[in-house]
Image (cartoon, helix red, strand yellow):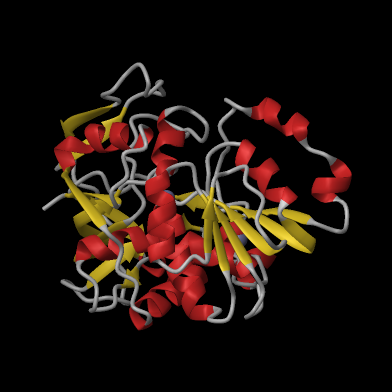
Length: 342
Ligand SMILES: [Zn+2]
Ligand SMILES: [Zn+2]
């Protein structure tokens, strides 16, 4: 089968073709697994972290990609949740132990045995992949394959971030950074919390305009001060400045949720601007979002179909994965990027 593989960690600013197109053996589904014929795979910021070594695959070569939509091609022994031909999706969570406290409580994203799709196990930048059947999801019919792919990561993790804010309807919400995840979060927040005002901090004027079209009551630059303190803020940026700046706008007892698997080191010194009485005192909280649970994916797909949330898409061929990644790195975001495999 065709696959775009990563052979080693590299700096994307210097080396623009980190992935290599190869022909590799088809994976064979083991007990309880299914073989998926991949139709599309979303391109995520996390792939940049994997390529540049902030969350590297444990071994090389690796097939990246964790927002996968395809059809069931073959069932491994004892796999019976799906039928051949069913349309399924796979998200960042590839597997977990199923027995620990976190798994039992539905927070399998926190399991010590958590394995990530497209990092710890081969993912979707290929024609086929295998996955334990319990970690594949039916895709609601309202979505095309391309529309569904970004929902599996940016959407599901955005949903988890929003849940972790513990926002109540009517409380104010801030979003700092307005990329793929921000677009989806504002749509679900408007639906889940119809009486809440949403404030967006974004560097580019285009993003600010777009956020207002999607229902933000206010949009400003990263370091702007909002007219009222915010009860919760979600940060979806890869750096530190937006975190420090957002804390100024956070209300007493407010919670800032950082939705990022890793932060880049480029502006780490900005943390020295942190002013305890202004930014953290009065029981303000900072919480990270780790991975995504199966429950998040299932609940979010249902919610997204109800609303409905249909992400803007920019399509690339599988062979053009390097270009998609470089475009993402350079911030050229017109919509969620997806690779068309077949
Ligand atoms: Zn992702
Ligand atoms: Zn576990």
